[in-house]
Image (cartoon, rainbow, N blue to C red):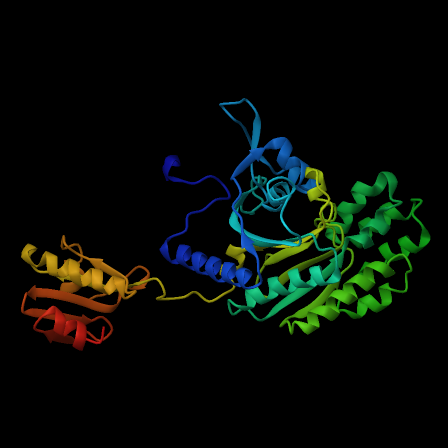
Length: 419
């Protein structure tokens, strides 16, 4: 294929069906967010490199898409995450607002990915941020909102995976020079690798015991009881248990698992973390947690918790809304002197919330003549075609059956045609 007709690695087009489903997901989620009192904000697609770098984790800093602003010569970056932008807004433009602040967003983020990684560079996200509330109730609200939101889309068979960055802080506190390699080994949960680097180190014996028995620290919620026997872990475990207790009052519909040694995002989050996964999805549907240190990087000390939803991953795991955005009617006047009647009919139907194509140029003549109302996305005109043969002869051809109903004028069609 001609190079100029292809797309860069990691981006894609969305045709009408996928675009409409993505929009439906966005509308449902934003509506649910609003029911919980979250107000939408919109942030810019790119920011100064230094501004964005202040608010992102180390794993993102090497995945920034950078370029030079031709007007100022400053280095700017396409946003890899929207949460730091909201942190900046809260510390500046929204600094005089009453706390807690409940904010939500939707938009695309862009991340550099290595060639051949198979990961998307452009991701469509929706999310919520609860700022100014540093309590179990705040963590629980954010998690419950994430779960209830995706439940709204009909997704029920999901698992909530809970963690706490405080556990890793304890585990890594005395890691010294092996810290970076240990983090890599923990990310892969590679027990042999961990043993090889930890055994000769000076890490305390009780932490070594944890690292040598990782399987005891991820799985079902019974793990919490066993982990609480370690005094240094106990405060973190108590926070997770409290969150689960509050979540039960929300009547959430999901399984709950625990991963106390999850590395992903641990330098970014500062407390309870969570991930929502589906048994049929390779990627996380939702990631989130507490990040009390982020807003302070922009000059204001505000506790916060939030989540981001991968809209495309969610779309792949929910049923599409076939027909929701398809055209209802095609109106075809036989001659130009019927154009005014055709326009009047189209406007009336549109004002009644029907989706209408007004075919004044005969573009659909072959489809209509053959009574074939299907195109590449399925049934095209879901109700049918209205043919204006003359001012006293109107035909309604029903697309599903091919049956024809005749009317003598527009008024008769509108009152007796079942429209």
